Length: 93
Image (cartoon, rainbow, N blue to C red):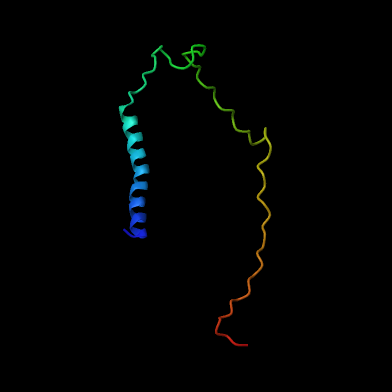
């Protein structure tokens, strides 16, 4: 066999290693039995209250009108400078 033929054989063998490793990981994940967690009525740590309190309401938005701050005014307008007209590329001047 020539040098390039040995290179092809070497690559054919070396590239099978990741494939075999992937197949082993998949086989290991399939054969591993699922973990059953203890059912103690509420889950979580034993020092936590199994009946959590409901969350409170979010705060009210700020009041507007005579009792609150006035509505913010609109921002000042800004003018955009006009652009010069585009000159065609075939124009000779």
